[in-house]
Structure formats: C-alpha cells, structure tokens
Image (cartoon, rainbow, N blue to C red; front, side, top):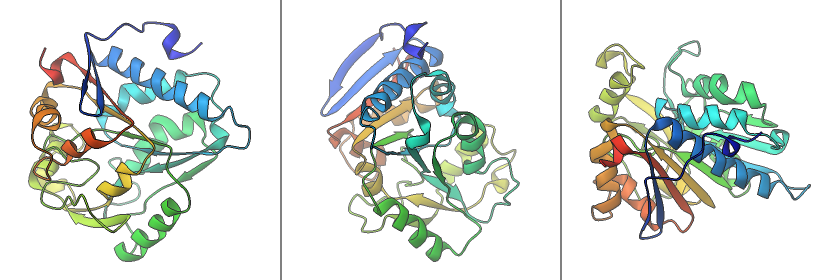
Length: 262
C-alpha cells in the first residue's frame, strides 16, 4: 500500500504562482502524505527504466518529518537504485552530535529505506577540500529530484540572504550563518541556546539546487508564514532566496493552512 492509498485528501487550495504549483493542505499530516505520494510516484516512474539510477538531494529539518515518514511507507520503490545526497551540514560539530544533518537523515530516512548509495557532507574536514570532493560527486551526473524546505529568513539550504548568490559558480561552498537562521535552529528545538548553534556550515549553492530536474518544496507551520508569503509574492531577489524557486519549471510547493495563512 502506498501513502496515496489512504488518508490522502484534496488540497484546500491548488494554484500556480509563475512556474510553481502550490498545494495548500489543512495540516502537516495531510501535507506530508501528499508530498510523499508525489515524490514516491515520481520515483516509481523514473525507476521503470531498469538501467536507471535516480539521484536525489534531501533537506534535513523538522519541517520534513512528515514527508520522510510518508516516504518510508511508500511501496514499490527500488531504493537500491537511488543515490542520496543532502544539501547542507554544520562545520566543526562533533560527529556524535544529534544535530548533525547527516545523522538526522540517516535516522529518519536512509537507515529505513536503504538507498543504494548515500553520500554525506562531512563538516569536520577541511572546508575547501570537502566542498571540492562533494561538488565532484554532484557534478558527476544530473540531479533528478530535490526535496527542500524554506527557512524562516527565506533561505534555501544554508543560502541565507547575506550569502545567497543566484549566479554562484560553485557547487558547494562554506558559509557563515545568518543570526536569523541560527535562531531558527533554537526555535525548532534542535539547540537549547543560540550560542550552541554553529556559526558556519557547508551548503549546496542556489544554482546547484535549481539544477535539479524536479523540486518538491515542503513548508509547514506558522513560523514559516512570513517567509512563504515572501517566497510566493516578493520580487525575485536574494533578500528572500526562496523567491528564485518560482522560476523553476518543475517545482511543486506543499504547504499547510498555518504556513499559508488560510
């Protein structure tokens, strides 16, 4: 049985903003089930080619919890032919720290569905060398699917407004985190205090994310309302990096009543 075989309802609103399909659901559970059904359906479609390997990038954040729970329940996906990447990682955070994004994704998804390849960023390595290593892996072939969220300051991955570059020539880069971004990590319950949140991270750049053939954005919760409104309606600029998503020809936004403001 697939996620889309049960408890899947029609969105409260379904409309287009420029190139972006926006689906608004009553709550996070409905949103997550719908997103998982859509990602699962696309995976099964791509994997109909028996020679095909699907390359995917995943976000690590509490906003993605319902998506990943849904994907775990999806049936008929040959995960052994999926190569999984993630989009950002803290620098200089101990490899045993529960806040590491690679650990989050391993616990929530990778250990449960067992992708054939999992490529993790390592924030404990030399930043320049790690960006080069991971960039080479990403550059080896196109990315088929990107599952991402939007930060409270409008960031995508760790491309905060001060460091986001829509024309970035790099694949992966080291960045200093905006204070608003770091405060979100406290608001999400990932860290107890602002001073506990690392100040630097590695991130896939905006062009790397936008190069994905198909994007699925999952944005729930009242804390994202301002950022989502900006992403949907503000002029496209790095003041809200998520505005660039509206230019992607293959993006679907899944959100809920609280984030959208219905």
